[in-house]
Length: 141
Image 1 (cartoon, helix red, strand yellow):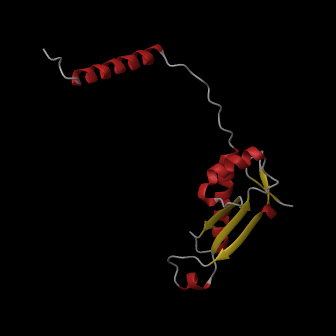
Image 2 (tube, helix red, strand yellow):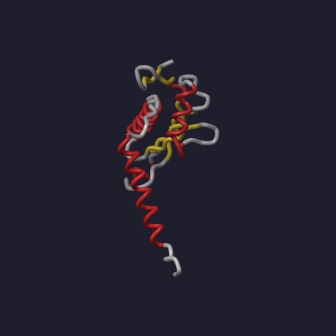
Image 3 (cartoon, one colour):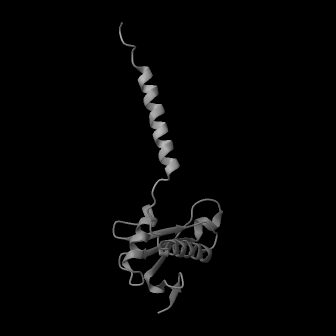
């Protein structure tokens, strides 16, 4: 089965992609009314054998509203006048999304606040406390 390379480490099977076509909206005259050029791309993230679980998790988070409850990623492309250009556009957007999810996030390295930043924090707290203290009514006398 032909594979589509996303990154050097990640590739997806071509048979995991489902394309369907519909009529586009917007300008285009009679072509828009007659020809189904808008591309609908469906990629089942949940059942994909090409992606590991960690990559699927990151992809689900990046996909946002484009992901259905069943774990199917939907991409709709209608920017171009031809069916083939819209198909390539939808596929390119999917590949960019998977490539972004394939980048492993850097682990956060814990750091401690510097001496100067701690001193600034204390100074700010002292100033704020002084401002509040001055708001109090003077003692009756």
